[in-house]
Image (cartoon, rainbow, N blue to C red; front, top):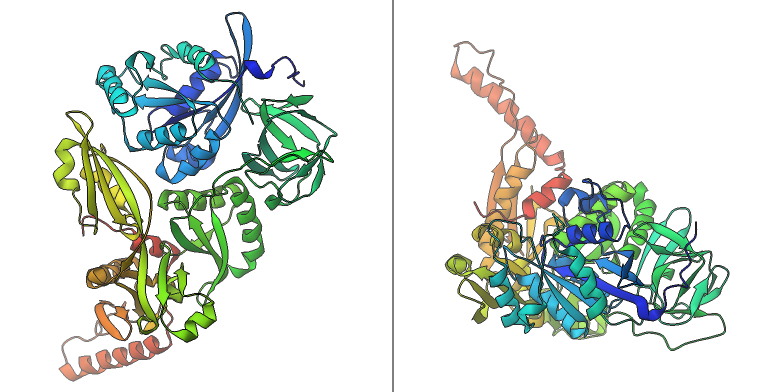
Amino acid sequence: EKLDMSTYPVESIRNFSIIAHVDHGKSTLADRLLEITGTIAKTHHNKQVLDKLQVERERGITVKAQSASLFYSHEGANYLLNLIDTPGHVDFSYEVSRSLSACQGVLLVVDANEGIQAQTVANFYLAFEAQLAIIPVINKIDLKNADPERVEKQIEKLFDIPIDECVRISAKQGTNVEKVLQKVIEKIPPLKALVFDSTFDHYRGVIANIALFGGEIQKGHKVVSAHTKKRYEVNEVGILTPNEQPTHKLYAGQVGYLIAGMKEVTEAQIGDTLFLYKQPVEPLPGFKSAKPMVFAGMYPVDQTEYNNLKSALERLTLNDSSVTVHRDSSLALGAGWRLGFLGLLHMEVFNQRLEQEYNMSVIVTAPTVPYKAVLSSAKLIKEYRKAEITIINPAQFPDKLSVSEYLEPTVLGTIVTPQEYIGKILCDRRAVQKDMLYIDEHRVILKYLFPLNEIVVDFYDALKSLSSGYASFDYEDAGYQAADLIKMDILLNGNPVEELATIIHNDKAYATGKFLCERLKDAIPRQLFEIAIQAAIGKKIIARETLKAYRKNVVAKCYGGDITRRMKLLKRQAEGKKLMRKIGNVEVPRDAFIRVLKRQTDK
């Protein structure tokens, strides 16, 4: 049946997000809040109910922000609480900032065992800049190592929030969670509201998640998009509890979904404003667009799948608007795209979602970062129509002779770590230390200026293993700086493999070349002929590994006899191998690409 939403005026609606570092218990707290308000039935199966994607279930992390509407009565009055559960990883901070734009307050969850970590700090500042009410919640007080007093002091010292405002809870056991809802009603002001997310349904087209600033909307209304100027008729409106629940109308201050026959995925632009036909309004400011930090080529395994992959990409980028897409093509892999992601985990999750939700298997090339080159050759400046170009594909890297300088992107990284690991962490990744601050007697915040390409592949994994999982990491963009960059090619039997070409710093060329050749030797399956794996800068070969051929034992039938018989058989075999090597093609399997590019600390 349809719900009547007119009984919830603006002043009895609260919109809030749950923000925290990875694994501090956001989704578990959301489960308890859903149970207390009777939105879902109480069972022991309720584990991260809002993590609906298969990739979230498998990895145990939140990737998409999910919203749910809760009905709660407090001191005799009925309230509608709209909750948004957000991801914790640095790659998905765009999801967090988008969610905050639809809220008036946040629950800042901190683990009583771990204390404040890098993403806690980053998310606090996102909420603080958006001028939201912040309610600190200390979770996991049921653990035997929990130390809520220490965490309260950290919160007071770093965020200037008085100790008596902290709520101590255990989301797993449900201890004190009711108090969180009361705080939400007392502390968070009522709201203003826009399309803040959208998904694609095969049968009903685009489903837009909207937050209403004013007025009301119902089935049959004609609405216009401020972004595309197109007109739609509303087929259905409703709220999310967390599944879709149709209602007769949505009123000012409510958050819900709208289906209006949008067929094209590009029509529901996130951050767009919808208004009634012939009643135009000033569009809302929308969101600041996300900045891709990592680029990778994506190609269909089989070129006949190109159109299917194209529509799958369009639908998935609708749901994850922080991915940028450019057309691209490669000699070896055919037509494809160059995609920009916010980080490496983001890239892996996107890839996994393509496979699970759209049954698309794709080839993803080595992740690279966007470099810039300042051109000096008049011919090239004329060709590109500007003196400074951005290089997102190593194949387009201009020659050193026509460039006055290369620039590489840098980031300002914040590492929060227990002090006993400082010695191990002070790193060799061409980083410059900017600051070092003790939060309390056990924890330190280190600030470094990193070149982005040094941290893009595996910095996070290495940091976790060096610090036994205690250190946390967060970064923000810090512009470009000049660098001595070169392009390194990988050759297999003298033929360059375009997908493995990389742009690297001159100081690291030899070590990286040798390392890549060794890794390729392990990753490429042996053939019936010998394969020479070489790293080259221009014409100069800087490293080589040889992958030996499979050989039949041709001398097994010789018992004794003269040595010349054996030599003749071996020579004949060698000639056959030589001929085979001339005509043989080396296939590099898909998983070899990613295996080669994950740096391992043990080598």
